[in-house]
Image 1 (cartoon, rainbow, N blue to C red):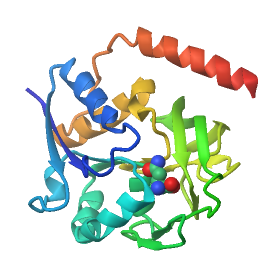
Image 2 (image 1 turned 120 degrees about the vertical axis):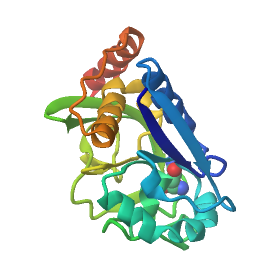
Image 3 (image 1 turned 120 degrees about the horizontal axis):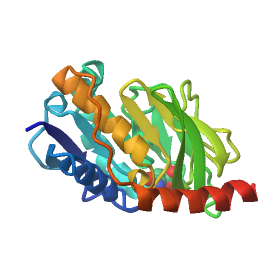
Image 4 (image 1 turned 180 degrees about the vertical axis):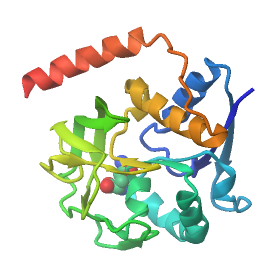
Length: 248
Ligand code: GLN
């Protein structure tokens, strides 16, 4: 039986926006296909993980205060994380975690929270708390040559700059900053995005893109995933796409 090993970072701290749902979607879509899911949680005080021991690293979003709490702990693993990225381990990073893989996050109080500096982007929150990027968001991207719309919900004060390879083009919503036409960051085995929802619940194609990448890498195959019945997801997607794209 095939198995995927997932490391879930800071589930007790970065869980303000329901991003745990992404883990549940991955588990569901793997186990429906008879693939074992081995999920390890890591948070402050736990034994140091070796990021290379996993197929997929997941981390969610959180408020400025929580980002400040865990930044020092996360930075301890910079070298190991860089090694895992170089070795092809997949990283799925949502919002606050996305921000912390860049140079820094300047919080709404003006405090600088150091990032891992693995990527050159940086994020600065708008000091006017009423000005947050909040709402439904739709982007289009290319997954293995297939143009795909990704649907989510954004809620961030942080405005991210210096993105060289975005995840996608904004069709509805803000993106990396107010009124941006680009959203997220994608580079080989890294997907970092502002999309909550949880992200994968509304985007089965993206879920399977990540699953296929991880299985192909681990088992050195070009796996064809058994199709799942996504009728319900696709009905939801159609309703949202019709509602937000026809409005726009
Ligand atoms: N605290 C960060 C911001 O406001 C991240 C928010 C989030 O993870 N949704 O931009």
